[in-house]
Structures are given as C-alpha cells and as structure tokens.
Image (cartoon, rainbow, N blue to C red; front, side, top):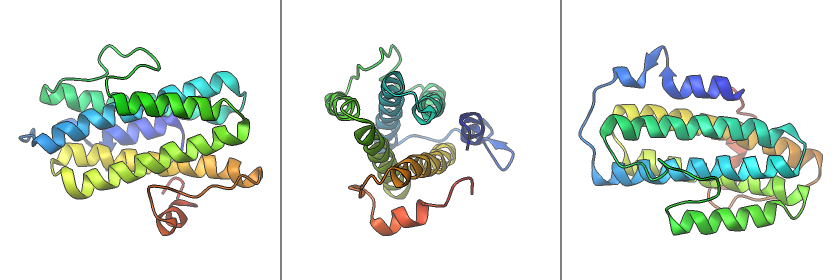
Length: 194
C-alpha cells in the first residue's frame, strides 16, 4: 500500500473522518498511549530515513514517508485533545523518551552494519509497532477517534511488515518476531492491502 493511501486511511475509514467522531474524555492510559505512539511512529520514520541514506533500495524511503504520515495522524489527535506533544519540536534522531532514544541508537547501529541487518531492523520495528498497537487497542483505548486511527496504523504496519518480509525472503534473511506470535505474523503475511 502506498504511503499516500495509508495516510488517507489513517484519516478516513469507510468515508468517515476521525474529526467527525465525538470528542470524548481521555483517560490517563489514552494520554500515555498517544504520547508513546507519537514517538514510536517518529522513531520508525527516523530509523527508516537514516537507513534510506545508507541503502538505495526504495523500501526505506517509501516506508519513512508513510511513517511520517502515521506520526502526523497521532499529532492531530494530540492537538485535538490539547495533550502535550512529546515530538512537537522534533529533531531527527532525538527523542524525549530515554527508552525510545536508546532503541533508536541501537536500531540505527544495527541497521547500518549491513543490508541484511537493515531488513531485520524494519521487521523489528513493525513487530514492535503491531504489538504496541494491539495492546493499546485491547487494553488502553476506547475513544472512537483514537481507535479509528490506531486500527488504520495497524493496517499500515501490516503492509510494512509484508514489504520487509518480501526483502527478507528474497535474500534468505532469517528472522523471527519478538513481540507478536509467529501465528500472528503468519496471519499478517499476505495481508497487504486488505
């Protein structure tokens, strides 16, 4: 799925814009989830953008663009609810969360070591995104607008997983998920565009 289509889906679902949904009271769990997802999606963008500088394969550049649209959709929700945006003044590769900063540093180091490791980094990021979105949807979020955006981000992450999986398969790169089950991964593979 192209980045433009992913962005469109993040803002609209079955012809409905998330802004058309009611503004509901936010729980502390929803606030924390939105702030975490804002930086996690920015992490994905920044890592992919850095890897796009290293490797000429379009997958990193294309998915970096998509991730910027994902993080922008989260920024829209933060603004809508008047919640502090941890990435408002974002500098590429710099994060307010020490955990995200450490993860960024580790993933860039791993991904710039070889093309094969870069593909694994893409799979790792999508593995983490899918797990975090699944958890947020199941346990932390009940506001309709947030659920709409998160479900669309989940579809985008499934498409990204498929893109990186194709590169892994073509290049005999072994990888297993750490955050989602193998059964969940098998269900995602071949999902693209559904």
